[in-house]
Structure formats: structure tokens, C-alpha cells
Length: 138
Image (cartoon, rainbow, N blue to C red):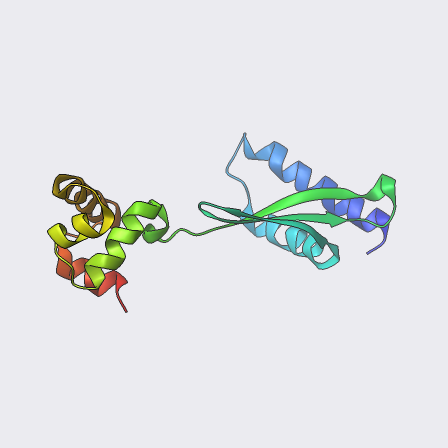
């Protein structure tokens, strides 16, 4: 896409963003503009985030017509909200381990495991081990 087309696309996106505080953003209008930008962009960086991935993109041929933007792809699954420790406990629960076994394997108290299991159930909105296994375990 030549520079003026890119400039027009960017100005249209700016108009939508500026107007968003006065009314709800019009996603239907933004999608084709973002698609145009993505078609001419090249990836200049990728970053893993706790809730997904961030892609740093660049578009434009000349220095005066160049734009940098970041595209974030978020993981909205509930499992992504678990801490690494909670994920480990989840895996052990899926293996059929008891709280006492998990505590011994991880070198923590049974009360710590009990608390982590309660947090896992709350975060994943399940009411017990069977519901957890049905949701997460292969």
C-alpha cells in the first residue's frame, strides 16, 4: 500500500479512537481499517505475556510514512489466570494425587495445597475435583 493510503487508514483509525470517548466505538468500522494495516505490516518483535502474546508491527515504506503498532492477542480462557504453582497443583490433581501427596511432592504443607485448590476452584468456577478433571484434564 502506498504512503497516502496508509496515512488515510491511520487518520480514519485515529478518528474512531477519538470519537470513542463520546460514544461506543464502532467496531464494524475499525475492523476493515485494521485489516488494511495488517496486510502491509511486518513483524518486528514478539513478546510472551502472562495473558497472551504481543506482536510489535511496522507498516510504511518511507521514514515519514512509517507507523509502529502493537497487536495483543489475549488468552481469555479461565485456565490462563492460574499461577504456575496452581497449574502444577492442577496437573497433580489431574493425575489423581491426594492433597497430602501433592504437599509432599511440592515440599509445602497440606494447608498450602488446600488453599491453592480452593483458589483453583474459585478461579475456574468449579465446585469440586470431578468438575475440575472434566474441564481441564485430558
